[in-house]
Image (cartoon, rainbow, N blue to C red; front, side, top):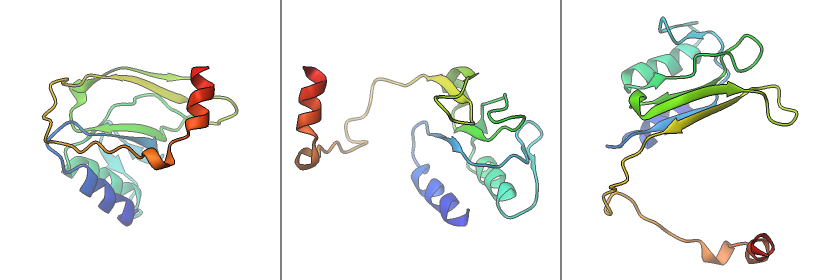
Length: 130
């Protein structure tokens, strides 16, 4: 977990809205009371979320009675329509659907767009378009 949190800290150190999603397998975090089992993993994730200004917005269990699949955001008002729905295919986890509001006026200097044309799947694109 320390390496994951180091990466999340690095990639979330931005000036714009940040959303982190995934199955982090931390069933003993109480996101409402902001308490966690002290085990070096779950308490570390909760501490990261709090100190970095993230809120966890999923409120319903995603696997049996456990809330494992989470959506962390540093701008909770940018996320709405959060729904936990039936699992996809043969997964044992529910799906989490949500809408994200975003400012469409992007600063053109805030990111680099690079196309990886040498590794493009031209046959696949042709089949899809046909």
